[in-house]
Length: 298
Length: 204
Image 1 (tube, rainbow over the protein chains, first blue to last red):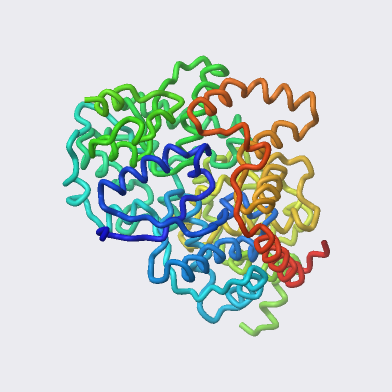
Image 2 (tube, rainbow over the protein chains, first blue to last red):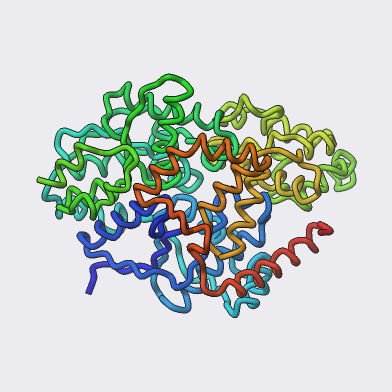
């Protein structure tokens, strides 16, 4: 039997051939090494993301999340839900908080859920994968399986917004969270001091307001270079995508020469745990993480 | 202070916001310190930063607030929430105001984030999960076919890179990621919208 078991909520971007498919690949490899069993919530749906508010309003957004809760309660009773996506976790946690026992919002939610033949009891809890790693397993347990320490690689730990605010990881500061740096050090890498660690990448506005967002992204990448980092590491799929994908655009428009790999913590851990480049989803990088690939090949 | 005295200083728009806007009952608690405005990553892009929006609501400036593109600058970074000395859920209030303005038809028509947000929601409702390819193409082509081709060409190398990295699937155009119980999802969302519309007085 696995050491820990959870109801898994991968989210839209962490599906095969979706924008964070390498997050999914590396999460599965990492969890295998840590003996953590993830069982996908059957037929889970989108959380509404942070941009869903404009058309989705309040109740429809909560109903979306409550459907996932209800499915987890029915099919995976007693299991906590774990999300890997920052926005899924945030959206679900917000709904969980708002749908308090006895509230009108909960009653309305269940009235809507009835249309899909479901009922939300309010039992399940929702965690982020980072919480599972730090709180349920702990840094010592995360260090134990390391067979290829990421020695000699300097990482800028880019925490971003949504795993950090408004909920954050218990015991961490909103302005200077250190868990990601500690994760990097746990697997043998070097975490450089990084002043843009909680700067917003623009989020969904990377699509609708590209110039404003690319100014944010430029700050994030530039500061990583300034602090001597060779790679950026993040827990959020939208941070990863925005900060990696738009570097070429920024180069084109602003004459910079950015070429900074942006990885997930789960990719670092998979490589450190002896996984192959493929198992770590390194073939999913637009900007290749050559130094990490070399370690994986060793 | 008697209830009557309080009511005298509460204008109609503030009352409307308190009743209909998500977390709107917090608006009167703003103490005008401006930490939210100074903390916003897109702060300089707001015609009226959050602190000003709160004061405008309290001054009864309904038209100016609801037709402003300010709230649409929110990136959902939650900086303002964690820094507000009075713990106002500012991000949610801004989302709530944007939603309210959008549903009343008062939000600026061609505001790009408004357009993208609607596309995003309509996209996810179809299959229960987001179709990233259709969403991107929808955004490129929102201003017509010619502009769409231009936008798509400008992003071509990124798109090809994503396909090569197996993070974008061209076949998403013909189906793609989906929930099984799409009918159930659509029915529950219809019901949820019906309840919300009734409570907030949206007509359509």
